[in-house]
Image 1 (cartoon, rainbow, N blue to C red):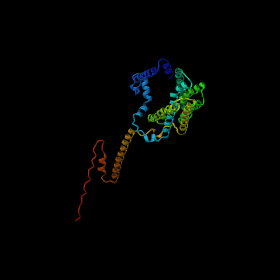
Image 2: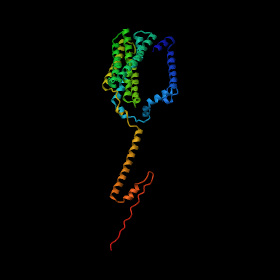
Image 3: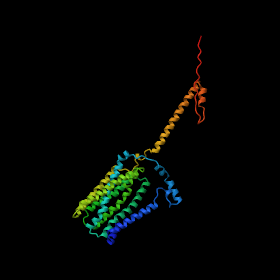
Image 4: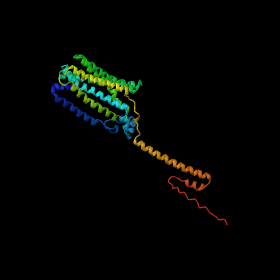
Length: 347
């Protein structure tokens, strides 16, 4: 945003699209050049680095080769999954409102010019990045020391990010025309939002490492929906003659959604690996079937051999039956029929 404000002030609106569109194309070029599916396919890393990556990822790569069936019923009826989806969707409302409407608020309510609006609108996101790095380090440190469960750490991060932003928005709705207070609250709101990256954004991977992509897709769908709905409804509220009362309503709605986010995640949220994360793979099922067949055949052979020993102990045709079962692998087993008894008649 700071760059956009400077570009607009000096070169017009078109320069923003040319600049960021060109940077996107350059990013794709470097992505295709430097990103590969596996270390073995990467042409620019050393053999030592390649060996290290292959060794550390050996178990994960072997596990990923298994075809795991998606446990749709368990996934779609999981309370932690739906809680995580709502939490991310709710955060999308406040995030999009702050992203899209903060410049409008600063321009119309604080009478900022385009350059100053761009700089002040972009500052919260720079602070968010800085705080996210430091806060993530603290969360990882607490996790390594086993100070509390992963679920507790995620909930703490969610309280800091969502409740912190909600409190800032509520105070902002009562700040009136105070420019200094408004700027402090807007920047603090962006600053604490950085804790989100250690909070609910990490929950899909916590719940199910094997199916985190599917869970994140659900979460992102909810986020995108409310990220579109938030600015739309907020825009309807402030349409026409903009007043501080209208803006206060916009901020209070966003704050209320943030608070509901915190309450639901604190009660129903979880970051523990779910039982359905490790369903039996198709490969495992096939192997189990082969093992069952082998065990059944072994039981049949054992039963036959047991019967032969019993007959041998009774002394009935022992030599013939024992000789029939004394064979090497690959020989055909042939059991001769018993000789017909000789019947004599009494005169």
